[in-house]
View 1 (cartoon, protein in one colour):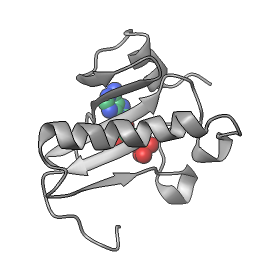
View 2: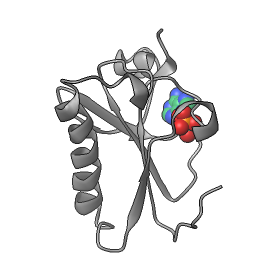
View 3: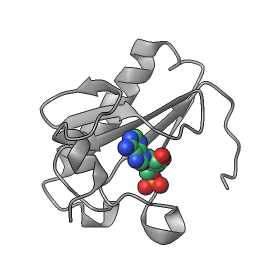
Length: 113
Ligand code: AMP
């Protein structure tokens, strides 16, 4: 099922895009929960982590590597950051197109809410 992220990929609605390659798109979260809050998504629509299949290893890895590269490029990698994949209801997922949340710019709490 198409989500709002498909519309961002298709440039049908605007987003503050900070990174793009053949398989990955990253843009600022519209409702940031930290001074830096960027979403890394695959261009391929996958609803949740549960739908990742054999063959998607590289795609999942690319999201993580793209986020780490962004953290280094933006200069907060050493200070620290958090990455999160919310999954289904209890995980707090609201958009059913997998996305890696990259949060930085403040000290994070643990356990998360
Ligand atoms: P989740 O709750 O983990 O599914 O995260 C979905 C995230 O997408 C939330 O943090 C929203 O603020 C964010 N979001 C929803 N619509 C947009 C949009 N049009 N542009 C950027 N971020 C969005």
